[in-house]
Image 1: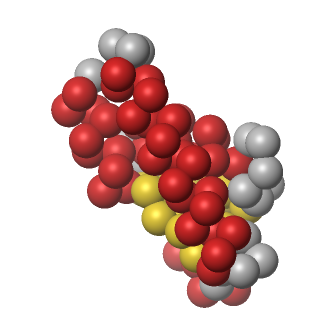
Image 2 (image 1 turned 120 degrees about the vertical axis):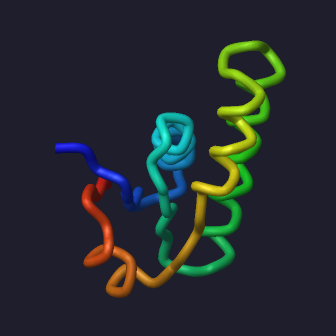
Length: 89
């Protein structure tokens, strides 16, 4: 089974990196947090990690660009979780 959409709960040390990795693999990934501010901070960190990988040649420029469109942030746990194929906490 291939999953197309994922939710990553948490914006601590691992959440943004997991979401970034999923997006680089072509998965639509939403970072979930308790409030919008933390969710947006997690999204910024994930985007920064993707950019860093691209700058150091650890992913292709095209893949890094595509992943930007696949990363999202939300605080709507009840609205997002039923719409995804995979949830990671």
